[in-house]
Length: 269
Image (cartoon, rainbow, N blue to C red; front, top):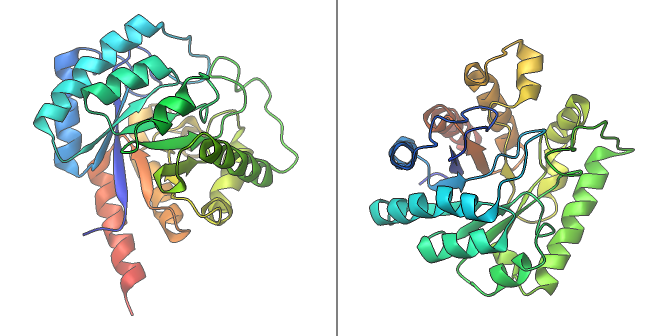
């Protein structure tokens, strides 16, 4: 059994940066979720609100309409796969948990909705991911500045970890995400990727999301996000070397193969 986990991205949105609109239809979303699992995803992250730079917020009712039926049907067909809800709203997370989700991926690190910490704490079988983000999706790329991006992100995650524990969420239920591309310039992202060992050193599992991101397009000259698979895989392999063991990805099969090789090399004696 592999020592890494792949979280397949399932955006039930019309406007996500990479695949917006492709899985907006509920039946298409379920089919894609099944494909992600077939390719090797042990987790599927269902999101109904885009968090791309400049994205406009989505109302609660619409987000529920997009996500809850998809999670319910995927739970019926994939009883052994972890289903995640990518949301900042406690009401959406609650509905997703009732439909079968056991993971809450919150890009605000439980700051976006005051009811979210207590909700997660009240469901002991549910894990949560705390991510670093400067600002909010609509404004996060408006000239972000850091004196020491690695130190500041690590300190933020440490503080949010403590806050989650105070809220009653045990550390063994918490993952951390440095938030590549969320309120960061390309140089900030590269510094974080170069020093991921400092995020891993916080002692919590790290979930990394670099898949198809604009930073990779700028480096490689690939304008179409779908053409950034190779670049995405390279970041995952390097992160694996630094101790990261969970990856949020669009292209599950490619990441699975590359990480299996990285794992085999690391285990060689």
